[in-house]
Length: 307
Ligand code: FAD
Ligand code: MG
Image (cartoon, rainbow, N blue to C red; front, top):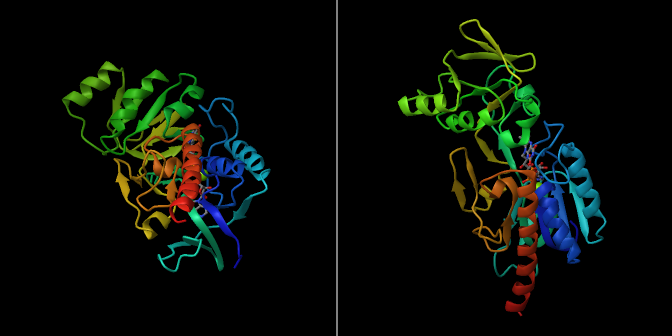
């Protein structure tokens, strides 16, 4: 066990977590960033839509972020998984409020920032998973432009896939493959027609080649890229362990936070994909910036109000 009591332990050292660490490091606060290295976009070799970093390998963006944050002497990095977190019961509290276990190592802190990201739950279609982030995507803003207005396929997962199908014609001629996921009604068909979307009813057998969809009726449709709407889960069980309030959404729940990114548990902040409805690198960075400042303010105000 280390004797250090950190001002903040940040769980998740990707875009959101490092952005929070930057604010706290610049305030000369003692910070421990714990990261397991499973960034959500690790499957993609180019990241788009974040100004100044457009088209850059997301691993390079994360590495630059880490090297910039590492220059602040009060910030420490620990590679590994935070397994459990306990809120230290009031009364037993000295200066530390949280205990974070990484294997057998106990780490103590006054505040906690959860930047644990999300895990995508991909449809179990043969050949899809290995093409995730390469020719199968979920976000048109991230990967639509690079398809160069080629043919785009949307493999439906539910009625929610209507949204993708209606958006994507801005990036290329679009086919919605229903794949038995829902039954389009007259309104659906009318809006799809208005956007020039082709509707394909045969089910999907497998994805092959670059983005070739093999259909159950024996035909193969070739696309420049495919889109699926994947449900997700929060990247760690820690929010559940702590009993934090969640905010349910159509594809999964995220951690509920106030405008300064504090969760339902005082002293616990959350930021990035795990704690906001829209997900991108730019938004994760902005969210982490807020959480870092929020946690820093709580350290000052907490110290004043507790004498
Ligand atoms: P993440 O980047 O997911 O990082 C979470 C970190 O927390 C991980 O390193 C994880 O290992 C760590 N972690 C979780 N639990 C623990 C634990 N218990 N202990 C230690 N560490 C833990 N966005 C764009 O803006 N442009 C794009 O082009 C783009 N392309 C994408 C392509 C794909 C295929 C996908 C899936 C997403 C893409 N995104 C893109 C979205 C982008 O990846 C996310 O918005 C962004 O990664 C969110 O950052 P984050 O810091 O919140 O979470
Ligand atoms: Mg992060």
